[in-house]
Length: 142
Image (cartoon, rainbow, N blue to C red; front, top):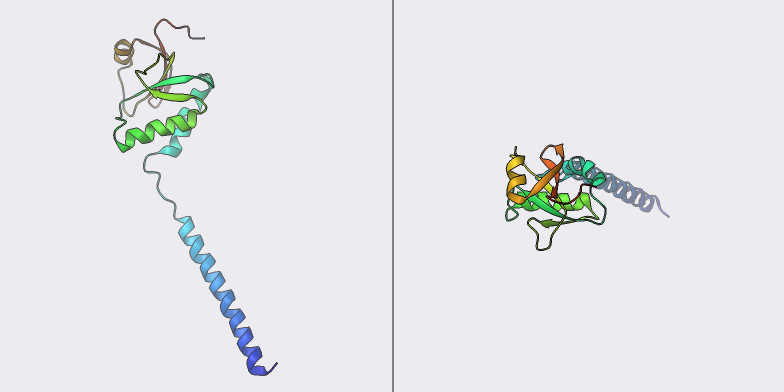
């Protein structure tokens, strides 16, 4: 192999190595720019973690909120709660079939006495930060 061919081969190898390093740096820069969690889905895990210890794993749980399920924030709140409380199933409350447990997920301070009275619920536990568990009035809180 001649000197010119050897030079072209080394130049090609150096070029490929340079392009590979440049592509890796570009990928790292793009990957490190995190997408903001617009709806706070990640923060929901901390809010719902203690709730899972109260609700039975196979329960169908009613869901009430001050956020409309018809807008993006309300839908995101519902699905975040569903995700973090699985394998429990959340259903909008009042539900088509009777449920014993009801999860309250509120984005602002709420009059719990009014919620309890209007929906015939008994507050079992307020976890703070807008998360609470209710039972239907007349059911045991075992």
